[in-house]
Image (tube, rainbow, N blue to C red):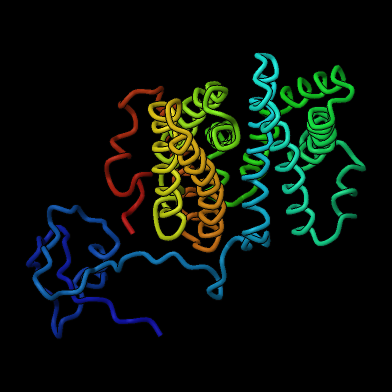
Amino acid sequence: MSAPEPNVPEAGAGGPNAPEGPGGAETDGERPGRTAAIGQGGGRHRRRRGRGERPVVPEAEFTSYYGLPILNRPTWKTLDIAGYLFLGGLAGGSSLLAAGAHATGRRALARSAKIGALGAISASTVALIHDLGRPGRFYNMLRVAKPTSPMSMGSWLLAAYGPLAGVSAVTEVTGLFRRSGAAATAGAAVLGPAVASYTAVLIADTAVPSWHEGYRELPFAFTGSGVAAAAGLGMLAAPVEQAGPARRAAVFGAALELGATAVMTRRMGLAAEPLERGRPGALMRVSKALTAAGAAAGLLAGRRSRTAAALSGAALLAGSAALRFGVFTAGVASAEDPKYTVLPQRERLRARSRERRRETSGGGSGGTGGTDGGGGEDGGPVV
């Protein structure tokens, strides 16, 4: 059963105090309050609501059929996949740092970065396979190379990068085949940025609102985060006198991560809300604080104090991990709430409708009769 409509005087030609017919019947074939309830008839004629009165139009609630989410909740395990995102970035950034340290003769920094890259990509692959359930599912993704699929390209990227990182680390530890090791180090560095950023492309290619809407800036944020994490590992493992490239990389990575994240959250609009609220919002704030503090402390005090360098490195690693877990959990939250799917779609439809009206009216204000100013944003009634 539908609730009775509120008895609001009709705002028509007779004014707000127009008389009713005998017995309270409508005089013009319309029910009292009908025009006001749907937002027509001019807001200046509508009687204002007094204290204690219920609103004519209830606040909209965004639900779906049977109370189920519009999108399926991502089935990926948080620890496995968020860890996979973090470790992949750490591996890619470490290969870049290793190549620079190798070229400048900083053996201790190069050694720690090469071993770190191999360890991170190995752990990342283990986390991915654990989420898939069995190794055969990962091997099946290598049967076909599909350039339009981020998952297919990512699988082949891992298959190419892993052996290069392995040869680079093994030759560094054993001292054998140094020329092959140098070539492998260079090859891993070439693939490093793609390894650090492709996971952002992978999750942005889904329909999950808080992932998909960040498709422009998220790869840059992940790349900067990976570079900052690798710099943190270098500051932890290498002597202070050799960690200069790591300190500079920390500043660059932190600036790229924080800048891209700030631009992304401003541009995303409503879809950025899960990144700012609840547990995901707390993780994002922790990531921002740790990343900024780690980069600043490493640059200012890391060159003089081994303890300060180690603390800065730990902060950078923790900040990078917090970013990946924050982005992952925000995506899950946005998939569970229908409004993050419905409202952006409505806004896009309204934008296209306004664009079509501008095209048909020649781009000017004449000819439309002010259709944009009557009711809702698209010229329709306010509901």
